[in-house]
Image 1: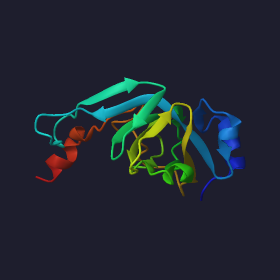
Image 2 (image 1 turned 120 degrees about the horizontal axis):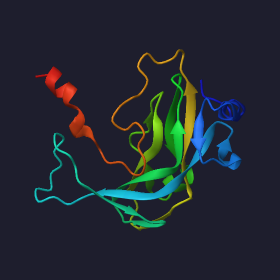
Image 3 (image 1 turned 180 degrees about the vertical axis):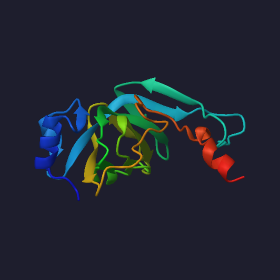
Length: 182
């Protein structure tokens, strides 16, 4: 079940759901607006031009209130908001229609697990022929919350727990899957 503004306000007041900083105008009828932070990360160029999933990927991270996203460019960004989800609540990261109509694709991994704490890393892609100017503080997307039928047996405690800033891929840490399937 998707949570309403009334339920979200109640949970925020009780501190069972944490979103900080938060202005009341960000709370929509069935979502909470999230704003673009000022940290951006791009994959560093490598001599092979190949990303290897078993090795750490190098990122160049910049802090700026403005970022020009060139056509066909991909960048990681972060939200201003830090969130902490209880163990029976999940969230979906959704882009804003107004930005999608400009060719800005927001997230391709838009799921937030129960128990997650941290800033949300956004995956931004410019599918337009024109550059798009991104400004910190602007509404970039929304979180839609859904209550689970029960508390998660294993709430999130993964490699992105507590992340701050635009956090690059840590897929190289996924060694359990590799060793289990050899």
